[in-house]
Image (cartoon, rainbow, N blue to C red; front, side, top):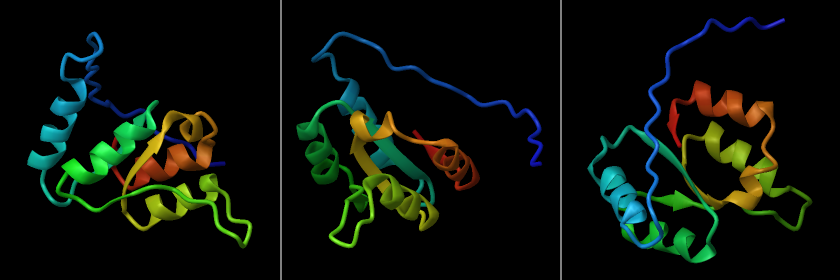
Length: 111
């Protein structure tokens, strides 16, 4: 059995009406972050996925299913394990399991 010690986590919630600049703020935040900082960006909109990929000076990758039967959930685990910056829609994120949460924690991702 793995016992975890409670850790303090800093949480900033960016909440405002649509069109007020939340995504622009996030893009600028990621651009200004140190190169070693890893991000996973989750959005409800597919066009926002493309916006992040083209606007941020990092190599963001999207989880993909492949013809060999690997699911997007399996691919996101691989991408996290490899320390990649990830962008995806929230539909995939709704299906994450404890392994994904543990990987994000171990790899010190910013969500």
